[in-house]
Length: 196
Image 1 (cartoon, rainbow, N blue to C red):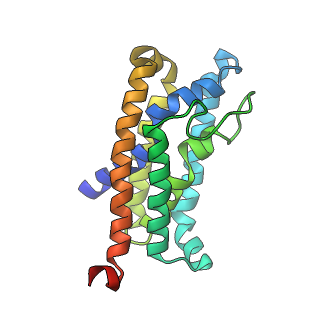
Image 2: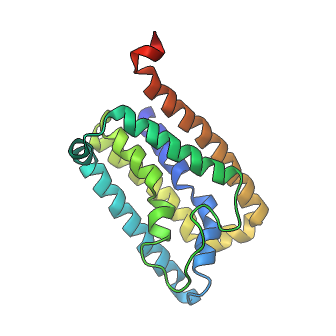
């Protein structure tokens, strides 16, 4: 149970729903207010479907590409580190760059905001050493928490304000930096020349 909770927390931090609130509000600014909840829910469902594909096909993708567990762990750590840096030192364009306007479909809200390359890399890595059932539970818990926050994006933005959201995002970024470094250290420790 502890492993499921800790894995769900990792997924939740990577999805970064609080940090994504400004992005969601910015992308939806030209969408009619009555469509907001429907669009957000649709994008969240698309993101969840993408995560399930990676969960159940990740191992086969790794085998097909001939990628080692260490390669995935190091690359996942690098991606997490870069995203964490952007969370700690945000840019005006946000983590994923400028949006194109209009009603979004898949990009940028479903992918890469919720189901981005970092969570997909971590998910593919975890399929090599955790049972699919526990990963499914972890990803579902993290997705439900993320969905609850993003569906309440407008009221949360009013309550926390821009500064509050930025402070929380930076805190999450600090946690992700530590997690990304630990992922890379774990991968490097598996090489004999490091542990020797």
